[in-house]
Image (tube, rainbow, N blue to C red; front, side, top):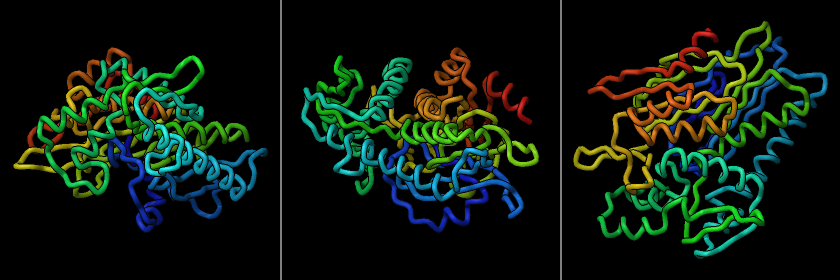
Length: 355
């Protein structure tokens, strides 16, 4: 899950205050190319701050859609509600209360949290436990959770923390309560922004808006066309931490897009690179050569989670999984000081059909 930035918004976005409130498992990789609309284009747009980052929405109004200011109030109310339900950084959110609870606790949770847990459960199962939303203690231990010093933990300390990690200790009971067998701390950032993209798209659909591009903290979905029957286009960046260079341009119509990468949130100790992408089974950051992976899916939440899953699996296991499950995915792999890239057959077919 990765920050896709709309070029027309770049001047605005870089001047907005940013604080990391969602420790995403992937960092910025793709940039959305919407084209800069002039005053004669019948396109409405809104921008703002959410989840410690930014959001941007562009849409072609329908006869049923309200004024942009009214719609923005509705959508920002959705963001505020989601923040109160699922934020890891607010001590009073529903998720924070669950995280603070002791082992063997069951609590009623908002449907948003339960939905994301259900999605995460199938990703956890499919990845044989490498994808796991209980890795927050590991992020903190290794110095990736904001404020902590970057450090390689000693094996004994790591083993202690691992006792409170593992999605197998999490379940939803018959009363629709969220339960944990040990003192788990959940981090749903690997699906949260994509989940909210899907919810905003659903809200637009209630007003019969079918031409839109919705981007939240980098997770994105676009459908329909801009005025003049022009497609919505995004640029996938090369995985570089020194500058932003477009590697590929894609036209979208109904796809959610998410990119996960390890090339901006990492540190080095004695020449060894440690990224903030963790394999929950080992408790260590992944050490493979996959630099970034982009996933397309009708559901932005699914794309969000799958890009993280494939990033954890790596260039070989992740590729085999993507091909076997017919996932449109684009892999960028380190090879010495350079990169090689390849797309699954489903990704290549979509890329070709949308040229």
